[in-house]
Every structure is written in structure tokens, then in C-alpha cells.
Length: 453
Image (cartoon, rainbow, N blue to C red; front, side, top):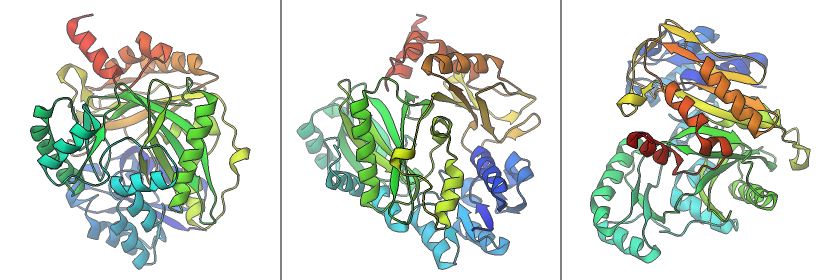
């Protein structure tokens, strides 16, 4: 079994991994930047190592420093969490060359699914429906326009690498394309080091549904059901996720799960991963992409499956077989996660920084908090504004929604602006309560509020 794990990440996910390691008797090594010296993940790890200055490029994304920390610490494995190096094949390759295990999929699987064009071809080969669009990155504005006219407006310009809503622009009319293509390219280049763009048909008001998959080194791949992730901000970043998607017909649920397993199996997938789909109003589903890492919203799947995904990632990395097959997996209840961020809803969700003067988290049965923050912690301007995640589990969706509403009312963070007031309004909105949401829900809600409706 693995003896010591370095966590190449920060914040709440670093805390999550440290706790899983501790429960398994594995020593943990936390890395941190100068700005994160007082973060909770630094306080609870068995060992800590500073990897540089405040900015990501000086620390968490400093490849040489992170690799050096892994070597010096004597870690025999590295867990990348999500973001940062989690989907970068050069990082996994460098670790392998040092004799250190990468807790994640193989390099070939990361490469196959990290390129959206290659991933689309893999999905087609696995007999999974795909969204109409270009098979390869568009070379220039003229090619992008020709492809958009072929499949019909509206279209999405999508970065071929990366995720998190970056490098994506919706184009409704031909005259909008040149400027939006330039913007998407620039954002993709800055975020992922590649400005290559695909053009895809934009499904109007779809649902964003993803399937959790898990594979081992012995050829076994299973899925753990789906998550509904349509509640997203204007930049396609998720705000609230839930499992299961209660309105999904069982026939479609089975077909989507089977398709996700076929896609993952086609690249010999090992570890935890997610196959993402868009679902139209008639419940036709289309492959969107595969994330070859743990997802922020993995918690809701854990709650309904009774499975610790981080522990299983560690066991798979150690060469163990999955302890169950598909028919052994039983999903129970309904879970919802809300992302708590340091953003000011009254200032167009601008980032908020400063000292957290007070922190009162909700509690009770079926309420879970994942965070790296506490009263006295200073939120810096250098990183993602995620402060933590509130997860609730109910017997069904109605109970889970009521439990989430109550927990949000109880949650109090003082000293900085947060999105808590916005989340309270969102989760009380009739469309959310009824489950009638799609990717247009948040923009429509914001428009309602702007009109004073």
C-alpha cells in the first residue's frame, strides 16, 4: 500500500485528501504558497512544504518546485486533486520518471481525453452520441464561420483543452463570430497554454448531466450514477449540483451510464473520472467531454452511493481491484451541493478578499461541509474564490431541497462578501424547488432580479 502522499493542491480538496489518507493510515504532505501559510490544509497535514510565492505560477503551478517537493518529502505517490496539474500528462509522466505514483489515470488516458477533438473521436468509436460540430480545431476565422454555417447558429466556440467554463463563447449571429473567436482563443491560451478552438452546435436550454466512472488497472470500469449540474453562472461555472437527476427516465439513465462506461473503457481508464453530457428537452443525450480527475461535485455521488471516492483512488493507484461490480452498486437518497464562494452578488460577483471575522457553519444529520476556511483566516486575491462546499443528503429531492434551504439560512460568514445571499434566493426560486432548471436558469433568474420581478 502507499505509505506517503503529497497533495499537489490547496484549499478544501487538499483537506479532503489529507483526511482520507489519515483514515487509511497514510502520511500526508501538504504543499503551500506564502499566501496559504495559514490555510487549514497546512495545519492538518502530517508534513508541510512551501513551494513558492503567492501567485499560482510561483507555487502550485511551478512544476519544478512541486516535483522537488515530492522527491524531498519521500512521498511515494502524489494526488493532484482537481485543477492545477490534475489533467496535465507532463506532470504524471515526470512523476513516473521519478518512480513516484500518480494517483489518477494513465498518461495515455489523460492525453486521449484532454484533447476535445480526440475525445470526440473516442466517443464516436464507443458508439456514444456526440454534438454536431468540427472534428478538428478550426484554423482561422473563415473556417470557423464556414463550420458554424454548416451546423447552424447558435454555436459554441470551445477551447480544445481545459474546462471550468474557460475558453467558451456562444455565438448567435455570424457577425459576432470574429470578435468572440479572438476572445475565446486568448482566454484559452492564457488558461491552458493552447488557443485551439472547436466549433459545436449550441443546444438551446439543455441540461448538463455527468456520470461518475471508476476504473482499476485490471480492466474493470463501473459507473456510480449521474449528477445534474445545470445550475451554472454566466461563465458556465457550476454553482449547485445534485445526484441523481430525478427527472431522468430510467431507460435514458441506463443508456447514459452504459455509454459513459464504454467511453472510459475505450481508453483503459483507471481511477475516478467523469463523462459529461448535454441532455435536450426530449432526453436525447450527447457526449460533451471527459474529465480525467476528481470533480468538485464528487461529494454528492459519495453521499448517495455510500462510497469514498478518494480512498478508492488511493487503492486503485496501489494496484488493488475495485471491491464491487456494477450490479453491486446501490444508490440511495438525494444529495445536493452548493458552492460557497468569496464573491459579491451586489457587485456582479466580483471577488471578495480579506479577513473572515466570523464563521458559523450549519450542522445536523445529513449536512456536510468541505472547507479550508475558519474564523481568522484571510482570503487572498490569488486563487479561485471557492471557500467551501455545503452538501446535504435527504431521503428524496424534496427533503434535500428543504435541508439545503435550512442549512444556507444557518450558514454565516462575516468580514467578507460571499454568495450566500444569492444562493438562498436561488434555492428558494420556484424553478429550482420544482427541479425545472436547465443551463438558462441562472441567467434568467438574474434578468428577473434586474427587472425587479
